[in-house]
Image 1: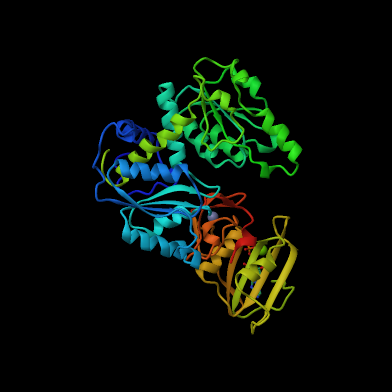
Image 2: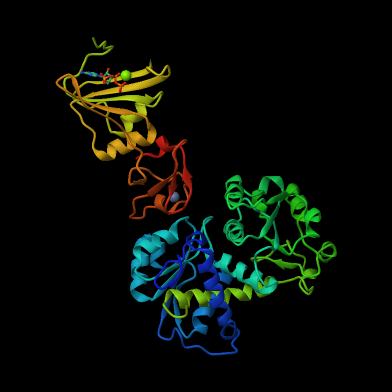
Amino acid sequence: MSGSLKGLDIVSIRDFSREQIEQILNVADKMVPVAKGEGKSTELEGKVLGSLFYEPSTRTRLSFEAAMARLGGRTLGFDEPKGSSVAKGETLADTIRMVDAYSDVIVLRHPQEGAARLAGHFAEKPVINAGDGAGQHPTQTLLDLFTIRNEKGGIDGNHVVIVGDLKYGRTVHSLTEALSMFGAKLTFVAPPTLQMPKEHIRHIESKGLKPRISSSLDEVIGDADVLYVTRIQKERFPDPAEYQKVAGAFTINRTMLREAKKDLIVMHPLPRVNEIDPDVDDTEHARYFVQAFNGVPVRMALLSMVLGGME
Amino acid sequence: MKEFKVTPIRNGTVIDHIDVGMSLKVLRIIGVRGDVSSTVSVLMHVPSKKGAWKDIVKIEDRELDPKELDKVALISPDATINIIRDYNVAEKFVVQVPERVKGIMRCSNPSCITNKNEPVEPEFVVETKKPLALKCTYCDRLTTDIAENIV
Ligand SMILES: Nc1ncnc2c1ncn2[C@@H]1O[C@H](COP(=O)(O)OP(=O)(O)OP(=O)(O)O)[C@@H](O)[C@H]1O
Ligand SMILES: [Mg+2]
Ligand SMILES: [Zn+2]
């Protein structure tokens, strides 16, 4: 499926073909100057974004608002359900029907899996999933792909090492699916209890790839083009001492990066806690702040495309 | 000559070739309880012709509607339905696992939005037939313990 995204919901990266993803990334490229404030756009002037955040999120919410503002549109909504009709027990379906009447496009972050799909059924206007619980977070995946493509000149053939909580981490599941669609070489580094679930590995293998599994970063870092770091949450470990040990073993620092290729890039969906030592920030490897910025042009592209603007 | 271990029924339905051990679940999901007014017989763990074991359920004065047939298929895909009229098998067919399942099952994922009081019927597509796994069209999770989740 290719062609216009006008009016479509953006719920899961799985709904998109490689061509469609490339089309979105191409539009995002054109958005960069305006995203930086170097150019002006009135493309979405008069348009309203309904932004419903049932869960706190700084980066995703602000970058959607920035994206809408850069294109000349406006945002209404809430950044926590407290005090809104939602707190009085209104169903998501009813809230969506209301916001559907007040806006031209809806962005939803919700703790329950499948919430965005449900919202899509009740809304006439396009719904963009900004994360549904442990489920999908397609705009994060798109901005990750955008970052790799821009920083490495392409996605295919790169060796992407993904490290951290691969079992529960929502972003890594859709990211690995997308990367396998693009034919990247994948290595998964995690403590055995937090390794990539078998069904995801099978899915990747069904695309003809053979991901490598490891529990040692040192073993694989020398050969990586992209190091994608995610947070290991304390709550996953009943024993705090065990957490300390594991977290320590998967912390990226300057010393460790001496073994890396010169053009290795380090990414992180942020916020980071201890996974990346601040001494990495001013190395030539660090890309996580660029990555965070890329959320703006990518979300601009999506807003523009589902509202029937650029193609 | 037919040999009956239970009293024959005049009119009704015999659900034969039920996966062994599933007969009580079959009765539950089609809503047969103690308050029915006609005979219900359950044969558990009887030998089948193929040399394996099966369960049989015989319900007098009752035919199954399409939704009930779908439910039976989901928990016992090889079951046969025999419609009995005037003591004879008037119709016989094997149940069919539907391609899409709507409104007769809940999602096994407790965090799924369909389990949260929203005005939607959960919907599933068949991911694999053997063993049967249904994929939620909302949260994408697979449900394999079908019998536990049929409503
Ligand atoms: N009048 C009846 N009352 C109760 N049970 C009946 C009656 N007639 C048939 N049955 C039962 O219905 C099922 C199907 O009957 P049928 O005579 O078709 O047997 P069959 O040839 O063994 O069928 P199958 O090939 O499906 O196993 C059997 O379990 C049989 O015992
Ligand atoms: Mg028989
Ligand atoms: Zn579900």
